[in-house]
Amino acid sequence: MRNELKHFINGEWVESTGSKTVDVINPATEEVIGRISDGTIEDLNKAVAAARAAFPSFSQTSKEERIDLLNRIADEYEKRKKDIVEVVTQELGAPITISEHTHYNMGLGHFRQAAKELESFDFTERRGSALIRKEPIGVSGLITPWNFPTNQTSTKLASAFAAGCTVVLKPSELTPFAAIILAEIFQAASLPKGVFNLVNGTGEVVGNGISSHPDIDFVSFTGSGAVGQKISENASKTIKKVALELGGKSPLVILDDYDMKEAAQIAISNVLFNTGQVCVAATRTLVPKSKHDEFIEAVKEILPTIPYGDPLNKGNIFGPLVSERQYNRVQEYIRKGIEEGATLVIGGPGKPEGLEKGYFVKPTVFTDVKNDMVIAQEEIFGPVMSIIAYDDIDQAIEIANDTVYGLAGYVVGKDKEKIEKVASSIRAGHITINNAPMELSAPFGGYKQSGVGREWGSYGIEEYLEVKSILGMPL
Image 1 (cartoon, rainbow, N blue to C red):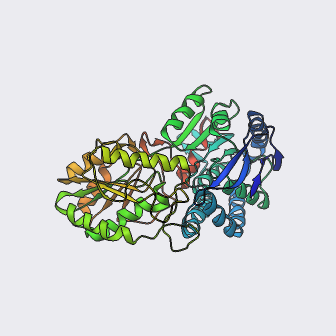
Image 2 (cartoon, rainbow, N blue to C red):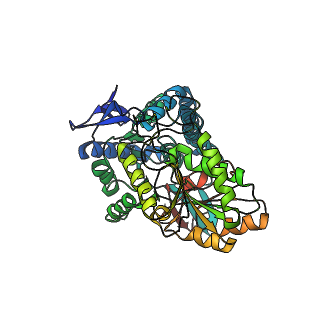
Image 3 (spheres, rainbow, N blue to C red):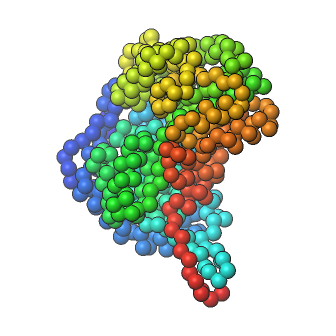
Protein backbone atom coordinates (compact mmCIF):
# COMPACT_ATOMS: atom_id res chain seq x y z
CA MET A 1 0.00 0.00 0.00
CA ARG A 2 1.23 3.46 -0.93
CA ASN A 3 0.04 6.03 1.57
CA GLU A 4 1.13 9.26 -0.09
CA LEU A 5 -0.80 11.66 2.12
CA LYS A 6 1.44 14.72 1.78
CA HIS A 7 1.59 17.44 -0.84
CA PHE A 8 4.86 18.80 -2.23
CA ILE A 9 4.95 22.54 -1.55
CA ASN A 10 7.94 24.90 -1.58
CA GLY A 11 10.41 22.05 -1.84
CA GLU A 12 9.03 20.03 1.07
CA TRP A 13 6.50 17.29 1.72
CA VAL A 14 3.79 18.84 3.89
CA GLU A 15 0.67 17.54 5.58
CA SER A 16 -2.67 18.37 4.01
CA THR A 17 -4.88 20.84 5.83
CA GLY A 18 -7.78 18.43 5.25
CA SER A 19 -8.42 14.94 6.53
CA LYS A 20 -10.12 13.35 3.55
CA THR A 21 -8.32 10.82 1.36
CA VAL A 22 -8.82 9.22 -2.06
CA ASP A 23 -8.25 5.52 -2.74
CA VAL A 24 -6.17 4.56 -5.76
CA ILE A 25 -7.32 1.35 -7.47
CA ASN A 26 -5.30 -1.14 -9.51
CA PRO A 27 -7.62 -1.60 -12.53
CA ALA A 28 -6.33 -5.10 -13.25
CA THR A 29 -7.24 -6.43 -9.81
CA GLU A 30 -9.83 -3.89 -8.57
CA GLU A 31 -7.82 -3.71 -5.34
CA VAL A 32 -6.88 -0.56 -3.43
CA ILE A 33 -3.13 -0.03 -3.88
CA GLY A 34 -2.77 3.24 -2.03
CA ARG A 35 -4.22 6.52 -0.88
CA ILE A 36 -3.59 10.19 -1.51
CA SER A 37 -4.81 13.27 0.33
CA ASP A 38 -7.90 14.96 -1.02
CA GLY A 39 -6.38 18.42 -1.25
CA THR A 40 -8.11 21.56 -0.05
CA ILE A 41 -8.22 25.16 -1.21
CA GLU A 42 -5.91 25.97 1.71
CA ASP A 43 -3.38 23.47 0.37
CA LEU A 44 -3.68 25.03 -3.09
CA ASN A 45 -3.25 28.55 -1.74
CA LYS A 46 -0.02 27.52 -0.03
CA ALA A 47 1.27 26.00 -3.27
CA VAL A 48 0.36 29.06 -5.33
CA ALA A 49 2.02 31.35 -2.79
CA ALA A 50 5.21 29.27 -2.98
CA ALA A 51 5.19 29.38 -6.78
CA ARG A 52 4.52 33.12 -6.74
CA ALA A 53 7.42 33.74 -4.36
CA ALA A 54 9.81 31.63 -6.45
CA PHE A 55 8.88 33.19 -9.78
CA PRO A 56 10.95 36.42 -9.68
CA SER A 57 14.25 34.62 -9.24
CA PHE A 58 13.52 31.56 -11.40
CA SER A 59 12.21 33.68 -14.28
CA GLN A 60 15.55 35.48 -14.37
CA THR A 61 17.69 32.36 -14.69
CA SER A 62 19.70 32.12 -17.88
CA LYS A 63 18.92 29.83 -20.76
CA GLU A 64 22.08 27.88 -19.94
CA GLU A 65 21.00 27.39 -16.34
CA ARG A 66 17.63 26.00 -17.43
CA ILE A 67 19.26 23.69 -19.99
CA ASP A 68 21.46 22.32 -17.22
CA LEU A 69 18.43 21.91 -14.95
CA LEU A 70 16.42 20.01 -17.55
CA ASN A 71 19.32 17.66 -18.23
CA ARG A 72 19.79 17.04 -14.50
CA ILE A 73 16.10 16.19 -14.26
CA ALA A 74 16.41 13.78 -17.19
CA ASP A 75 19.44 12.14 -15.60
CA GLU A 76 17.57 11.61 -12.33
CA TYR A 77 14.50 10.42 -14.26
CA GLU A 78 16.61 7.68 -15.84
CA LYS A 79 17.66 6.48 -12.39
CA ARG A 80 13.99 5.93 -11.48
CA LYS A 81 13.08 3.89 -14.56
CA LYS A 82 12.09 0.75 -12.64
CA ASP A 83 9.90 2.71 -10.22
CA ILE A 84 8.16 4.65 -13.00
CA VAL A 85 7.47 1.55 -15.09
CA GLU A 86 6.08 -0.34 -12.10
CA VAL A 87 3.86 2.46 -10.84
CA VAL A 88 2.33 3.22 -14.26
CA THR A 89 1.54 -0.46 -14.68
CA GLN A 90 -0.08 -0.58 -11.25
CA GLU A 91 -2.13 2.61 -11.32
CA LEU A 92 -3.07 2.76 -15.01
CA GLY A 93 -3.13 -0.93 -15.86
CA ALA A 94 -0.86 -0.44 -18.88
CA PRO A 95 0.99 -3.62 -19.89
CA ILE A 96 4.49 -3.44 -18.46
CA THR A 97 6.11 -3.39 -21.90
CA ILE A 98 3.97 -0.36 -22.86
CA SER A 99 4.80 1.30 -19.54
CA GLU A 100 8.49 0.90 -20.34
CA HIS A 101 8.65 1.60 -24.06
CA THR A 102 6.01 4.34 -24.24
CA HIS A 103 5.07 5.88 -20.91
CA TYR A 104 8.58 5.95 -19.44
CA ASN A 105 10.33 6.94 -22.66
CA MET A 106 7.92 9.74 -23.58
CA GLY A 107 8.26 11.27 -20.14
CA LEU A 108 12.04 11.20 -20.44
CA GLY A 109 11.93 12.41 -24.03
CA HIS A 110 10.14 15.65 -23.24
CA PHE A 111 12.76 16.75 -20.70
CA ARG A 112 15.60 15.93 -23.10
CA GLN A 113 13.80 17.60 -26.01
CA ALA A 114 13.08 20.79 -24.06
CA ALA A 115 16.76 21.10 -23.16
CA LYS A 116 17.67 20.62 -26.82
CA GLU A 117 15.10 23.18 -27.98
CA LEU A 118 16.48 25.79 -25.60
CA GLU A 119 19.92 25.60 -27.19
CA SER A 120 18.64 27.41 -30.29
CA PHE A 121 15.60 29.18 -28.81
CA ASP A 122 15.65 32.97 -29.15
CA PHE A 123 13.96 34.93 -26.38
CA THR A 124 14.63 38.23 -28.14
CA GLU A 125 14.51 39.53 -31.70
CA ARG A 126 14.66 42.84 -33.57
CA ARG A 127 11.87 44.08 -35.81
CA GLY A 128 12.73 47.45 -37.25
CA SER A 129 13.43 49.74 -34.31
CA ALA A 130 11.58 47.46 -31.86
CA LEU A 131 13.08 44.88 -29.55
CA ILE A 132 10.77 41.90 -29.08
CA ARG A 133 11.15 39.99 -25.81
CA LYS A 134 9.57 36.65 -24.94
CA GLU A 135 9.17 36.53 -21.17
CA PRO A 136 7.88 33.82 -18.76
CA ILE A 137 4.14 34.16 -18.36
CA GLY A 138 4.20 33.58 -14.60
CA VAL A 139 2.76 30.98 -12.24
CA SER A 140 1.32 28.15 -14.31
CA GLY A 141 -1.40 25.75 -13.16
CA LEU A 142 -1.10 22.31 -14.72
CA ILE A 143 -4.00 19.85 -14.68
CA THR A 144 -3.07 16.48 -16.17
CA PRO A 145 -5.06 13.37 -17.18
CA TRP A 146 -4.93 9.77 -16.05
CA ASN A 147 -4.29 8.11 -19.40
CA PHE A 148 -0.67 9.27 -19.80
CA PRO A 149 0.61 10.04 -16.29
CA THR A 150 4.18 10.61 -17.50
CA ASN A 151 3.87 11.98 -21.05
CA GLN A 152 1.23 14.64 -20.47
CA THR A 153 2.77 15.71 -17.18
CA SER A 154 6.35 15.82 -18.42
CA THR A 155 5.63 17.80 -21.57
CA LYS A 156 3.91 20.53 -19.56
CA LEU A 157 6.58 20.63 -16.86
CA ALA A 158 9.49 20.57 -19.30
CA SER A 159 8.05 23.46 -21.30
CA ALA A 160 7.26 25.48 -18.17
CA PHE A 161 10.75 25.03 -16.73
CA ALA A 162 12.34 25.82 -20.10
CA ALA A 163 10.37 29.06 -20.29
CA GLY A 164 11.26 30.07 -16.74
CA CYS A 165 7.83 29.54 -15.18
CA THR A 166 6.97 28.18 -11.76
CA VAL A 167 4.15 25.67 -11.50
CA VAL A 168 1.42 24.10 -9.44
CA LEU A 169 0.49 20.60 -10.63
CA LYS A 170 -2.69 18.65 -10.01
CA PRO A 171 -2.40 15.16 -11.48
CA SER A 172 -5.40 12.89 -11.92
CA GLU A 173 -6.50 11.25 -8.69
CA LEU A 174 -6.77 7.97 -10.63
CA THR A 175 -3.04 7.90 -11.46
CA PRO A 176 -1.25 10.18 -8.97
CA PHE A 177 1.80 8.15 -8.03
CA ALA A 178 3.85 8.85 -11.17
CA ALA A 179 3.65 12.58 -10.35
CA ILE A 180 4.85 11.89 -6.82
CA ILE A 181 7.90 10.14 -8.26
CA LEU A 182 8.47 13.20 -10.46
CA ALA A 183 8.50 15.39 -7.35
CA GLU A 184 11.18 13.13 -5.86
CA ILE A 185 13.14 13.39 -9.10
CA PHE A 186 13.00 17.20 -8.94
CA GLN A 187 14.27 17.11 -5.38
CA ALA A 188 17.20 14.94 -6.44
CA ALA A 189 17.90 17.30 -9.36
CA SER A 190 18.06 20.30 -6.96
CA LEU A 191 15.14 22.17 -8.48
CA PRO A 192 14.88 25.48 -6.56
CA LYS A 193 12.23 25.57 -3.85
CA GLY A 194 8.82 26.74 -5.00
CA VAL A 195 9.44 26.19 -8.70
CA PHE A 196 7.42 22.96 -8.62
CA ASN A 197 4.47 22.36 -6.32
CA LEU A 198 2.20 19.31 -6.26
CA VAL A 199 -1.29 19.29 -4.77
CA ASN A 200 -3.26 16.06 -5.04
CA GLY A 201 -7.02 15.95 -4.97
CA THR A 202 -10.13 16.13 -7.09
CA GLY A 203 -10.99 18.28 -10.04
CA GLU A 204 -14.01 19.67 -8.24
CA VAL A 205 -11.83 21.26 -5.55
CA VAL A 206 -8.21 21.53 -6.68
CA GLY A 207 -8.85 21.67 -10.43
CA ASN A 208 -11.51 24.34 -10.16
CA GLY A 209 -9.32 26.15 -7.64
CA ILE A 210 -6.41 26.29 -10.08
CA SER A 211 -8.44 27.53 -13.04
CA SER A 212 -10.10 30.29 -11.03
CA HIS A 213 -7.17 31.30 -8.82
CA PRO A 214 -6.32 35.02 -9.18
CA ASP A 215 -2.60 34.42 -8.59
CA ILE A 216 -2.24 31.82 -11.35
CA ASP A 217 -1.36 33.43 -14.69
CA PHE A 218 -1.78 30.50 -17.07
CA VAL A 219 -3.58 27.14 -17.05
CA SER A 220 -2.61 24.14 -19.16
CA PHE A 221 -5.15 21.32 -19.14
CA THR A 222 -5.44 17.96 -20.85
CA GLY A 223 -8.71 16.07 -20.57
CA SER A 224 -12.34 16.06 -21.62
CA GLY A 225 -14.13 18.78 -23.54
CA ALA A 226 -16.69 19.29 -20.78
CA VAL A 227 -13.99 19.97 -18.20
CA GLY A 228 -12.13 22.14 -20.71
CA GLN A 229 -15.23 24.31 -21.04
CA LYS A 230 -15.46 24.66 -17.26
CA ILE A 231 -11.79 25.62 -17.02
CA SER A 232 -12.26 28.26 -19.72
CA GLU A 233 -15.25 29.70 -17.86
CA ASN A 234 -13.31 29.82 -14.58
CA ALA A 235 -10.24 31.34 -16.21
CA SER A 236 -12.26 34.02 -17.98
CA LYS A 237 -13.07 35.66 -14.66
CA THR A 238 -9.43 36.72 -14.29
CA ILE A 239 -8.69 36.85 -18.07
CA LYS A 240 -5.92 34.28 -17.74
CA LYS A 241 -4.45 32.46 -20.70
CA VAL A 242 -5.55 28.85 -21.16
CA ALA A 243 -4.12 25.99 -23.23
CA LEU A 244 -6.42 23.02 -23.73
CA GLU A 245 -5.69 19.59 -25.19
CA LEU A 246 -9.09 17.93 -25.35
CA GLY A 247 -10.78 14.99 -27.01
CA GLY A 248 -10.68 13.51 -30.47
CA LYS A 249 -12.48 11.25 -32.89
CA SER A 250 -9.64 10.75 -35.30
CA PRO A 251 -10.07 9.29 -38.79
CA LEU A 252 -7.76 6.71 -40.34
CA VAL A 253 -8.14 7.01 -44.13
CA ILE A 254 -7.03 3.88 -45.95
CA LEU A 255 -6.33 4.41 -49.66
CA ASP A 256 -7.23 1.73 -52.17
CA ASP A 257 -3.61 1.16 -53.24
CA TYR A 258 -2.50 -0.10 -49.83
CA ASP A 259 -2.25 -3.72 -48.72
CA MET A 260 -5.41 -4.35 -46.69
CA LYS A 261 -3.81 -6.80 -44.30
CA GLU A 262 -1.09 -4.33 -43.44
CA ALA A 263 -3.70 -1.57 -43.16
CA ALA A 264 -5.73 -3.73 -40.78
CA GLN A 265 -2.65 -4.28 -38.63
CA ILE A 266 -2.05 -0.52 -38.41
CA ALA A 267 -5.70 0.18 -37.63
CA ILE A 268 -5.88 -2.48 -34.91
CA SER A 269 -2.63 -1.40 -33.29
CA ASN A 270 -3.82 2.19 -33.20
CA VAL A 271 -7.18 1.38 -31.61
CA LEU A 272 -5.74 -1.04 -29.05
CA PHE A 273 -2.80 1.11 -27.99
CA ASN A 274 -3.07 2.01 -24.29
CA THR A 275 -6.33 0.01 -24.32
CA GLY A 276 -7.86 2.65 -26.57
CA GLN A 277 -7.48 5.29 -23.86
CA VAL A 278 -5.77 7.74 -26.18
CA CYS A 279 -7.10 11.11 -27.33
CA VAL A 280 -5.53 10.63 -30.77
CA ALA A 281 -6.81 7.06 -31.26
CA ALA A 282 -7.95 6.42 -34.84
CA THR A 283 -11.36 5.12 -33.89
CA ARG A 284 -13.02 5.94 -37.25
CA THR A 285 -11.50 3.68 -39.90
CA LEU A 286 -12.39 4.87 -43.41
CA VAL A 287 -12.09 2.07 -45.97
CA PRO A 288 -12.72 2.14 -49.75
CA LYS A 289 -15.94 0.31 -50.56
CA SER A 290 -14.07 -1.77 -53.12
CA LYS A 291 -11.73 -3.03 -50.38
CA HIS A 292 -14.22 -3.21 -47.51
CA ASP A 293 -14.76 -6.97 -47.40
CA GLU A 294 -11.04 -7.67 -47.78
CA PHE A 295 -10.28 -5.32 -44.90
CA ILE A 296 -12.93 -6.92 -42.67
CA GLU A 297 -11.50 -10.37 -43.30
CA ALA A 298 -8.04 -9.13 -42.37
CA VAL A 299 -9.37 -7.63 -39.12
CA LYS A 300 -11.14 -10.89 -38.25
CA GLU A 301 -7.92 -12.78 -38.89
CA ILE A 302 -5.55 -10.49 -36.95
CA LEU A 303 -7.51 -9.23 -33.95
CA PRO A 304 -8.05 -12.62 -32.22
CA THR A 305 -4.28 -13.17 -32.23
CA ILE A 306 -3.54 -10.04 -30.19
CA PRO A 307 -2.67 -11.08 -26.60
CA TYR A 308 -4.19 -9.12 -23.75
CA GLY A 309 -4.85 -9.51 -20.04
CA ASP A 310 -2.61 -9.28 -16.98
CA PRO A 311 -0.48 -6.10 -17.35
CA LEU A 312 2.44 -7.84 -15.63
CA ASN A 313 2.64 -10.38 -18.46
CA LYS A 314 5.23 -8.94 -20.86
CA GLY A 315 3.56 -10.60 -23.83
CA ASN A 316 0.27 -8.75 -23.47
CA ILE A 317 -0.42 -5.82 -25.79
CA PHE A 318 -3.21 -4.17 -23.82
CA GLY A 319 -4.77 -4.43 -20.40
CA PRO A 320 -7.81 -3.17 -18.51
CA LEU A 321 -9.52 0.19 -18.66
CA VAL A 322 -8.53 2.53 -15.86
CA SER A 323 -11.66 2.38 -13.70
CA GLU A 324 -15.09 0.90 -13.22
CA ARG A 325 -16.58 4.17 -14.42
CA GLN A 326 -14.60 3.99 -17.66
CA TYR A 327 -15.55 0.33 -18.09
CA ASN A 328 -19.25 1.17 -17.78
CA ARG A 329 -18.87 4.09 -20.19
CA VAL A 330 -17.33 1.89 -22.89
CA GLN A 331 -19.99 -0.80 -22.35
CA GLU A 332 -22.70 1.80 -22.92
CA TYR A 333 -21.13 2.84 -26.23
CA ILE A 334 -20.85 -0.77 -27.40
CA ARG A 335 -24.52 -1.33 -26.62
CA LYS A 336 -25.36 1.95 -28.35
CA GLY A 337 -23.55 0.84 -31.50
CA ILE A 338 -25.63 -2.33 -31.62
CA GLU A 339 -28.84 -0.35 -31.01
CA GLU A 340 -27.96 2.09 -33.80
CA GLY A 341 -27.76 -0.76 -36.31
CA ALA A 342 -24.01 -1.06 -36.80
CA THR A 343 -22.82 -4.59 -37.58
CA LEU A 344 -20.73 -6.19 -34.83
CA VAL A 345 -17.71 -7.81 -36.48
CA ILE A 346 -15.94 -8.96 -33.34
CA GLY A 347 -16.10 -8.31 -29.60
CA GLY A 348 -19.22 -6.86 -27.99
CA PRO A 349 -20.57 -6.23 -24.51
CA GLY A 350 -19.21 -7.83 -21.35
CA LYS A 351 -15.81 -8.98 -20.18
CA PRO A 352 -13.52 -11.34 -22.08
CA GLU A 353 -13.68 -14.97 -21.06
CA GLY A 354 -11.31 -15.67 -18.18
CA LEU A 355 -10.93 -11.99 -17.24
CA GLU A 356 -13.89 -11.47 -14.95
CA LYS A 357 -11.72 -9.66 -12.38
CA GLY A 358 -10.49 -6.25 -13.44
CA TYR A 359 -11.92 -3.65 -15.82
CA PHE A 360 -11.23 -5.60 -18.98
CA VAL A 361 -13.30 -5.15 -22.14
CA LYS A 362 -13.49 -7.08 -25.36
CA PRO A 363 -11.72 -5.35 -28.26
CA THR A 364 -14.70 -4.47 -30.44
CA VAL A 365 -15.11 -3.71 -34.14
CA PHE A 366 -18.22 -2.37 -35.86
CA THR A 367 -18.85 -2.05 -39.57
CA ASP A 368 -21.77 -0.60 -41.56
CA VAL A 369 -21.23 2.50 -39.44
CA LYS A 370 -22.75 5.79 -40.58
CA ASN A 371 -20.87 8.90 -39.61
CA ASP A 372 -23.91 10.38 -37.86
CA MET A 373 -24.08 7.48 -35.40
CA VAL A 374 -23.13 8.17 -31.79
CA ILE A 375 -20.24 5.68 -31.95
CA ALA A 376 -18.83 7.62 -34.92
CA GLN A 377 -19.21 11.06 -33.37
CA GLU A 378 -18.47 10.74 -29.65
CA GLU A 379 -15.15 9.88 -28.04
CA ILE A 380 -15.44 6.39 -26.56
CA PHE A 381 -11.95 6.15 -25.02
CA GLY A 382 -11.76 2.39 -25.28
CA PRO A 383 -10.72 -0.28 -27.80
CA VAL A 384 -13.68 0.19 -30.15
CA MET A 385 -13.24 0.61 -33.91
CA SER A 386 -15.93 2.00 -36.22
CA ILE A 387 -15.44 1.11 -39.88
CA ILE A 388 -16.97 3.50 -42.42
CA ALA A 389 -16.94 2.75 -46.15
CA TYR A 390 -16.35 5.53 -48.70
CA ASP A 391 -16.70 5.85 -52.49
CA ASP A 392 -13.83 8.18 -53.38
CA ILE A 393 -11.18 10.39 -51.77
CA ASP A 394 -13.36 13.48 -51.74
CA GLN A 395 -16.03 11.62 -49.79
CA ALA A 396 -13.38 10.23 -47.43
CA ILE A 397 -12.17 13.76 -46.69
CA GLU A 398 -15.73 14.95 -46.15
CA ILE A 399 -16.39 12.12 -43.67
CA ALA A 400 -13.05 12.66 -41.95
CA ASN A 401 -13.90 16.31 -41.29
CA ASP A 402 -17.51 15.68 -40.29
CA THR A 403 -16.84 15.90 -36.55
CA VAL A 404 -16.57 18.58 -33.88
CA TYR A 405 -13.06 17.32 -33.16
CA GLY A 406 -9.77 17.92 -34.93
CA LEU A 407 -6.96 16.49 -32.87
CA ALA A 408 -5.39 13.92 -35.18
CA GLY A 409 -5.74 12.11 -38.48
CA TYR A 410 -4.06 9.18 -40.20
CA VAL A 411 -3.48 8.21 -43.83
CA VAL A 412 -2.15 4.93 -45.20
CA GLY A 413 -1.44 4.61 -48.88
CA LYS A 414 1.20 4.61 -51.59
CA ASP A 415 0.27 7.33 -54.08
CA LYS A 416 2.12 10.48 -52.99
CA GLU A 417 -0.36 12.92 -54.52
CA LYS A 418 -3.35 11.19 -52.93
CA ILE A 419 -1.62 11.00 -49.56
CA GLU A 420 -0.74 14.69 -49.71
CA LYS A 421 -4.29 15.64 -50.70
CA VAL A 422 -5.86 13.74 -47.82
CA ALA A 423 -3.26 14.76 -45.22
CA SER A 424 -3.52 18.45 -46.11
CA SER A 425 -7.33 18.36 -46.24
CA ILE A 426 -8.02 16.78 -42.85
CA ARG A 427 -8.71 19.59 -40.41
CA ALA A 428 -6.68 18.31 -37.50
CA GLY A 429 -3.48 19.35 -35.79
CA HIS A 430 -1.51 16.10 -35.96
CA ILE A 431 -1.44 13.89 -39.07
CA THR A 432 0.44 10.60 -39.33
CA ILE A 433 1.21 8.91 -42.65
CA ASN A 434 1.87 5.17 -42.96
CA ASN A 435 2.45 4.63 -39.24
CA ALA A 436 5.35 7.10 -39.08
CA PRO A 437 7.13 7.37 -35.69
CA MET A 438 6.48 10.24 -33.30
CA GLU A 439 8.55 13.42 -33.47
CA LEU A 440 8.77 15.20 -30.11
CA SER A 441 10.03 18.42 -31.71
CA ALA A 442 6.85 18.75 -33.80
CA PRO A 443 3.88 20.66 -32.34
CA PHE A 444 1.00 18.70 -30.84
CA GLY A 445 -2.53 20.04 -30.45
CA GLY A 446 -5.92 20.25 -32.09
CA TYR A 447 -8.36 22.16 -34.23
CA LYS A 448 -11.98 22.90 -33.38
CA GLN A 449 -13.23 21.36 -30.11
CA SER A 450 -10.03 19.39 -29.68
CA GLY A 451 -8.40 22.33 -27.99
CA VAL A 452 -6.43 25.54 -27.99
CA GLY A 453 -2.65 25.88 -28.13
CA ARG A 454 0.22 23.51 -28.81
CA GLU A 455 2.57 21.31 -26.81
CA TRP A 456 5.90 19.57 -27.49
CA GLY A 457 9.17 21.13 -28.64
CA SER A 458 9.59 24.86 -29.13
CA TYR A 459 5.85 25.28 -29.69
CA GLY A 460 5.25 23.98 -26.19
CA ILE A 461 7.71 26.47 -24.71
CA GLU A 462 5.98 29.33 -26.56
CA GLU A 463 2.74 28.65 -24.66
CA TYR A 464 4.45 29.63 -21.39
CA LEU A 465 5.71 32.98 -22.71
CA GLU A 466 4.32 36.49 -23.04
CA VAL A 467 5.50 38.71 -25.90
CA LYS A 468 6.65 42.26 -25.17
CA SER A 469 7.55 44.99 -27.69
CA ILE A 470 10.09 47.60 -26.58
CA LEU A 471 10.27 50.62 -28.88
CA GLY A 472 13.34 52.85 -29.07
CA MET A 473 15.73 50.46 -27.36
CA PRO A 474 19.27 51.58 -28.29
CA LEU A 475 21.28 49.14 -30.40
